[in-house]
Image (cartoon, rainbow, N blue to C red):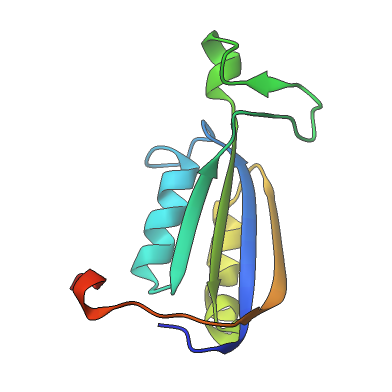
Length: 117
């Protein structure tokens, strides 16, 4: 668990249907982060959006357009831990955008009843 203080946040912008060698890239990245022991990660799925190609994608479009929706993955940990996994993460991202910036953890608490082993 991260303590209050300096940390690093990484945001990865992908499409939900970006493929990888074993399935879909967003799933593979989350699995990778989990296996690497990253402190926390979240996947956000968009209702609509567009990217580099300027093609609008919406969830109510139907067909391929609704499957090509944006996904945003965010995770955070210490700068050292992020630096250690960054080369492998960047190699995984074959189509998308990755950004990172320092952040400050103000409070991080989990009660004993809610922590699963």
